[in-house]
Image 1: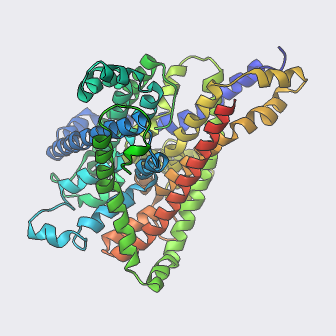
Image 2 (image 1 turned 60 degrees about the vertical axis):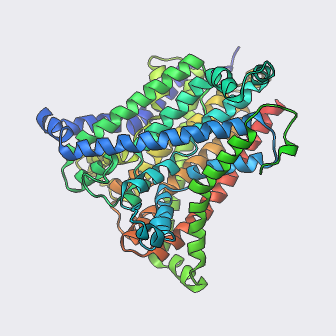
Image 3 (image 1 turned 180 degrees about the vertical axis):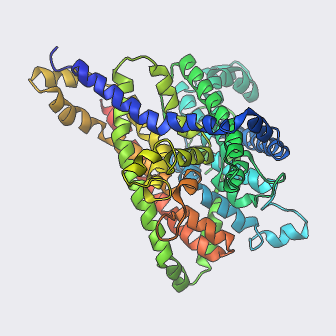
Length: 275
Length: 279
């Protein structure tokens, strides 16, 4: 039918315009990371990657993700079970509260933990009496990271579990299965891709978080430096090649995340939705 | 919250356990820490609070943040619709790759995005040198902040508009075409009004994210007070000077603004869902 689509050259123009925009704002920065990293040769690159402080930063980044991701997975599963399988008053308020950390600036996310546990903080006298350090130490980094990645798993699971209803679970329970057995044998297999999707996004943010962690970390080299903070320190010391070399590790993480995400989307033919 | 009486006839176990855990975890990690901010702000005198906020430097940073975030979200709205349209309607080589790469700003740590954009848009960078020939400085000016905020907000509009276009019922377009409307008219009179709630949601999400963004902006902005200092950076600076009261006051204003944005976004999404259900 006439006028149902655009003429070929307009289509071509629109595609080119979109690709130009994405090239300028997405592809170019990604390419720049790798180009800048190898600007002074592969030896400099390897030296930056194999540096002791880089190694310490990798270890801390993995540790932070290893604690905060499982915490948020446990919460996400519990919240999704309560919200998707039951009806109760105040559900919308609860959903909005779960979204809160997405609306809060990362810097404020760090600030609130400084106000709680920092040297002028509410809980500081008690912490000092028990010789516990949270701010400018690893626990603070874990807390801030867990805060900013809080909604990821829950937000993925809730719509999927709501869409699946509760017939299968009710059948399992009425046939005598326990609650745990029902969850592991019936619910979990149904939502495994959605759960994995949430875990991947949560992990990417946990390893890459900068603002919130920057506030609580104190930037102590080899001690409280995560990978993104290490990139910042190197960059601010004008060690650009080294900064971009370490940044390639994070860029690689981002690419793996995107590939896994695409595979899951392809596997489940799910529609795109907001993170 | 634990009102067993009002839950539906279901007999699934575990409501008490999962709901209890949800409430406790949410309170410990999110609600109590956030309320400490308001508690701390409430210990300030009203004059001190207002004095902090009305400080010249604070007002400048608010202006810089709001203006750059607004124009970045506008850029994202226009090009987000374009990218979503191209991905939903056309076939071309590399489409799957492009579809995947749109989410890069969510996956790439903001600090990495920040230094990469700075190297490109600095005066000796790939794009910066061409702009410099025209006498335009991008990095270390508000223009640089706008570039970084456009980068991090890019996926929002695409990902809100794309599903609407994919679930689209072509009948309305057919009707418009049958009645003799040109494609141009159909797009602006039929398609765009229908997309508007999704575009607005994406715009609001991108704007809200841009207001709070820190990592990708600090490297490219140059951080000059009154000129290229954004609100999150000013909070950071106050903290480094151990001015906790000042940081708290600014953060409180920002947090309230974020809550308002969140309510607007939720309302817009509720509108879209209602709209979808009605169709």
